[in-house]
Image (cartoon, rainbow, N blue to C red):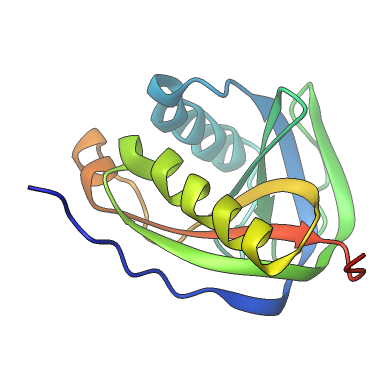
Length: 155
């Protein structure tokens, strides 16, 4: 039996965050949960208070996890970076609801939508983790907003 997926696509979206810490992570599907747990632990150790949702990004074979903070950090773990502002404009957004293992299907559907609308992606996907993952079982019921920056030009 085939499941029909009805996805809503929102255009002209903005993803805006302040006081961002980011670090490179594994883009392995199996490693995502462990990477987020590692980030949480490091943030607790450095007394960083998150002000929003975790965001993952994959672009040009590089994967990053971003976390907005209430305040600029005093100190950072080795390999982490700080950005005062992160702003993605002219994005198309959709939502994935279901197993994390099926996220690629939602990305494929988003790619087809972008192509059909004549949009040219200029960023990789930014995945906003809407629901917290406290255990691996939570990955089966993932809610993830997917943002892709697109060129404002349609040529």
